Each structure stands twice: as C-alpha cells, then as structure tokens.
Image (cartoon, rainbow, N blue to C red):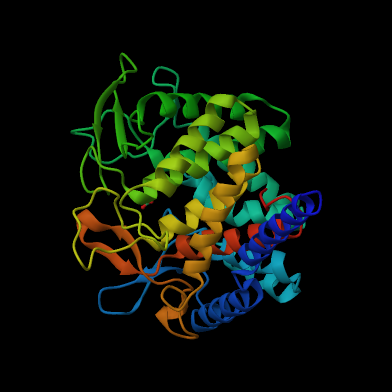
Length: 401
Ligand code: GLY
C-alpha cells in the first residue's frame, strides 16, 4: 500500500504534465507564423498603393480594399507591426511604417467610434514597439476625437451617425473594443478623463446590452433626453434577440481589457460570463469555430465566422491570466480555436485567398455581404492570438499595449 500510493500519484502527475505538454504543442506556432509571413509579404508586394488597405474579397473574387476612413483600415498595418514584434526584422518595421502613415489624418475624424480599431491597432502597436513621439501625438489626438462622441446623459460613446430617422443615440457592442485607446491615453498623459469615460461606457454597456445568459444585443439605441435604452436590436446578427458570434467575441475581449485597466470585479465576472457562454454554447461546433450567429437556424452549409473565433481566442488567452482555476479552461478553449484556425480548413495555402491568412469569415450576413470570405481583422486577431500563446507558453504575459 505504502508503495502503491506514491506510484499512483507519480503516474497521475506524469499524465497531467503529458496532457499539458501536448496541449501546448498542439499548435505549430513557428510553421503557422511562417505561413502568416508569406501571406503578408505577398499582400504588401502585390499592393503598392499604401493608401488602399486590403480588407476582404469581393464577390467576383478580386481583392477588396478600403480607404483610411474605413473601420478596418488599421488591421493590415497592425498585422505588419505584429510581424515586426515577432521577428524584430527592420524590414517589417519599414513596411509597417509605410502602411501606417496614411492613417494619420483619421486622428481628427469625429464621425466614427472606430478610432480604436483604426489607430490603436496601427499607431498603438507602432508606438509600443518604437516609442516614436509622433505616433504618441496622433494617438492622443485620436483619443480626444473619440471622446467627442461621449454623452453624459446616456453615459456612452455614440457608435453610428447613420439611420437618424430611427436611432437617437445608437451604441453597438463592438464599441467596447475602442476603449483600450482611451485607457492608454490616461496612462500616457496622466489625465484620468479618458479612462473615466471608457469605464462609464463599459458600465452602461454592461447594464443595457446583455441578457441574463450573457448573450448580447448588437445595437442599443438610447433616448438622448432621458438617457435610457429605448430600442434593443440587431444590425449584423440573425435576430434582435440572437447572439451574433462576433458581437459575443467583441464583448468578451472588451470586458477583459476593461478589467485589466480598472481591476473592477464586475468587468471580470462579465468577461467570464461571456467566455463561458461562447465556449459552452450548445450550437458551438466541436472544432470551436462558431457559426456566424449562435442562434442562426441550422443548415448544412451554415457559414462559420473565423474572425469571431480569432477575436475570442485572443481575448480568452488574456482572460485566462486573470481567472485563477477557471483560467485553464479558457486557455484550453483558446488553444483549440487557434489550432483549428491553423489547419488547412482555415489557413490559406501560400499565395491563395488574395494573400489573406484565414478563410471562412462572415462580415455582414443580413446584407449578404462578406459571407465566407477572408477578413483583415480575422488575420489581425489570429496573429495576436498566436503571439500571445507563444509568450504564455514561455511563461510571459500575453502581448498587449
Ligand atoms: N465592427 C463591425 C463588425 O464587427 O462587423
């Protein structure tokens, strides 16, 4: 007996360690990053106009590009910055700088809430890696422009300016992603106002956007006089009461950042609730890449959204570090998502897929636009997730600004 107990304990330990080792080794980070490198280089070489940002694939199969004022303009430059981060090769820095420069004018853009996506993924990563003071100034001006959309009465930053005949003050769940730049601006300038606005926006979103099961409405329209929510609906999801997969991913990631920056337990619990909704949903396929909406009626060719998986995976990796014992499950789900995305089912062959990295994303299903296509933000968060995983497997903190 004396002999068997320690032996059993040793066998159990070997099995647990072996399982952990296998889990960590499941993703071939290096070879996947080689593919990423090939695709991004080919994209930059094939597109010499650095003011036309690669976004997706058109219906006729051609490359879809956008100008700097599109909400996705910062993701391709941001991906180039991540390659510089990963390789430390100055050629990537040069490429990233070239593709970032044309976004500078957006610092003055007060017509959109997407400045975090546009400026923080590009200039934000650039500043983290280079400390270029010009980038810092652009980010602070961008944070001021974003703040101009905050309204005291609603306690939120206005998302969209269109559809004024229906909406008074629309706020979408995606807007949680633009708060990170405001938290950064407070740390950088010492002025707490940016962080205060970000935190108020997060509290308002927590109070109004979510149902008890942690699924989220896409759009909340606020009454500009009373400040109260007056319409709860969807724009890009299947139905007003459904759980649009990318919206869930934006919320998961956004509340994780809000917790990182405030240490407010409400945000941590909320991020964990969204994470568990996402990971354990009954309609989540076994490979952990969700269909475009968790409530979309089942059919054999129901499109997936690889972008939702990539965003959620990156967010889950950070959240795992704040979640004690629960963290292992989050890391394991994120690892599974990234490893599925790194298989030929999602990872494009060299020089295919218009040189984007991932296939099978869904942009705006109700509009029948960008269905089962590559999307630049899927690539950006996939690369971010891979770099986070690589660092975490070395015992380091995941990359964030
Ligand atoms: N932020 C817009 C989208 O996720 O499609």
